[in-house]
Image (cartoon, rainbow over all chains, first blue to last red; front, side, top):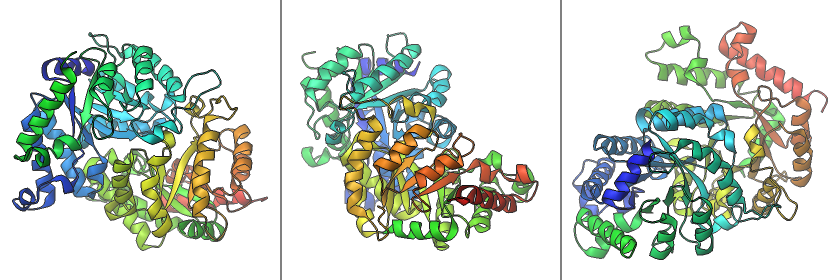
Length: 283
Length: 283
């Protein structure tokens, strides 16, 4: 089960997930100039961030939108970044948030669990219901792959639908959670967590306590730390001790060189170390 | 407003939306053999389907998953197919069902409304709330682009979340619809429809009547006809007379050559003509 590998990496390396949402704007101009084009600079930037953090990050979340926006050439970099992570035995979470009917989901599963865009985990949007994830389950069971389902996201708009109350008293996100939690239980690894986890933003303290309580043995991918307002206390509650989740940081890591006035890769390392210390200190 | 162009195309050419969910398996073997590889066969297949149906189809829905599954080379075909539609002045609906926080949505908007993967409409998943569509609205207002938001999908799983009742008595999909309908009203074209429409499957007759009644001046992208069980009566109810929606058909058109025992493009044309007749006859 891929979740066991992630669990062990969290234990060895800490809970930080480095988000490679690498906008071309984030890359220092003089670094871009040393490359034949911005695409090779983009890959090389990612590569150096990975090299500088691999022993202190549990995993890497690669946000496909930042590569799609650059078209075919951008997706070549997305592919190469995933290949690089794979070669190093690191864990890639492909943040694709797909959702579709099963015949189409079959294509997405093959696209992102095999072939050019292969990663270890993908994110999925639950709005289309249980049958929209069926086609991914074979990969979870037999191919060392995993899923994170959007439960309660970190944005303000998460209140518009996810927080609404159903007539049985549950929030919509709780209903979603209960449905998929039942499926997730069938894909548990040796440490008690399932390879089907949830995306839970750390920006809503009241819900955080409820979510961790309600889905005790669920592993969380946690966005929203720092820039979006989530604090170390919020994150710790979600993490369930030391190993129940990974905490994503993208901009703060990629742009750390603006804060530390050092090389971007050395700065990224400092930022990840600081963040790890901040989160773990006192747990 | 792009919706006015679509409205006029529906009036001139009929309500059929040809779905280019082109699986390599759908392409006749002897046609593939005539090409240097399956990617060029795939593009040429799409091109011939488009040529054979452009005067009798309102638009083309290109499902990106069927191209992503083929990796970079598949996405080259996706790009070329969209380019071909654009050159011909035809309308492309990019079925991407994306959803994300606004900084990421900004990338998706640029990726699919400009650059390599430019289309006229895109589909979006509403689960992340109102702010998840903000970054697309500038394109709708000023750049002749449109959106279809998933409301009630055609799959069985649509019952799991979309059909649940909130404590105010509304279904979840009605709550979603009411929220986005309010935004959509600000982007109306000259025929009274908005460039922000909904995806509404025609597989649930009870909801169909309610949906059309509730969102009177909303334009619908309607999947689920034929293979998934939707009938001409269901579709007519959703269409609001002749022009309030487009009805997608993918497999039935792409695989029509198995039914008519004729060339695949001539067969596709027959199938679209039949479907158009079936839907419009009696309206």
